[in-house]
Length: 68
Image (tube, rainbow, N blue to C red):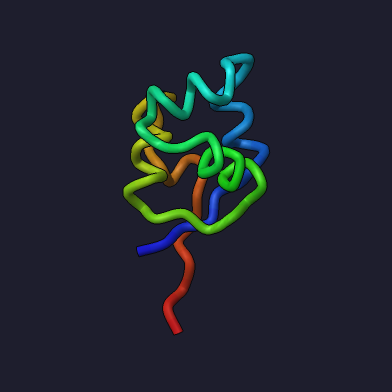
């Protein structure tokens, strides 16, 4: 399943933390974190990783992408 993050919310979750450090803690690449902050498509698993570091559920910053 893929989700569409709200880039502003992802940036707010990261706060003042260094992007590379936040990505490392989440187990994702800095490129993937940047994509999430630019509202790119993510897998639900990646959204869960970001949410785990920030202490929130992915539904707080993502919406599901409808299947066609």
